Image (cartoon, rainbow, N blue to C red; front, side, top):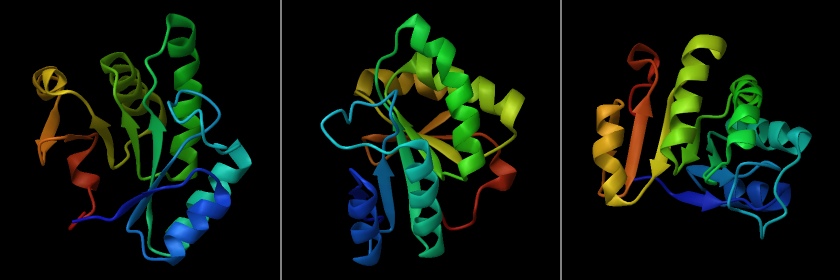
Length: 153
């Protein structure tokens, strides 16, 4: 079991990490439904991920908005940025976003641990076809490169 905590800003991320969260989820300035929170600038995102990892805490960035074509065209650049931050996973809820992330990361940015997606049950069949695995009734995990998955994670 994993204790996953929201991190609406850098101070909240540090608090969650210091109080024992196994993982935190956070959002950048775009592509997220976390509009009510402060969200992270690119600099804060890098600082937060580094802080979490130094304290043995995983980080997940939300890319869970349903994007329009213009936003989907902007997504690969952000995915490449996220790859460079060493984020552990991204949380998605749109098959279009999942497809863009999957294809771009495999072809441009190398391999990474996984993408996690919270979806309605109707998405699970399509995601299974795309290579996702279903866990605990609500979480879908897509492994980009099974040989690089960390043991025990």
